[in-house]
Image (tube, rainbow, N blue to C red; front, side, top):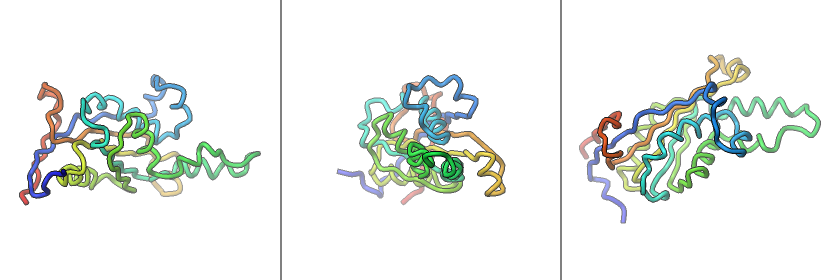
Length: 192
């Protein structure tokens, strides 16, 4: 039975974890990791340090909310460039031409089966939407991921600066560990 939407919960956010292209050199994530696109690689790396916070929580009660500033544009450009190659564009890369592919990779790696949302553009509503899923009782926790991945070619198309960083944090109503120093922020829900 879900929680009443009229109940006010304090939401607790874990410290923010970040990953950039520089982190890829030292990443030891297994053979499957090498086939991922850049957005998915960085998202998986950024989420990795916060997974210990899931504890014994049921994996179907943990969701993922992801905001991708440029969607999958960098991967789309790479896929498009492959059209002139012998054999055509990479079928492996095709799966990553969806902005939500990083959500799938995180969910598969950590067996997360809760609802997920993918936002195209900035992360202005990421915390609000994740908090809403928790307050409505659909989730007990949510992995929030903000992707700023824009290749040089994609940057030229959108007249934006190249970037390759991803940030992640875990949002929940439950205490995160016994050490309160781990808590980055407590967000008070609006009175309903």
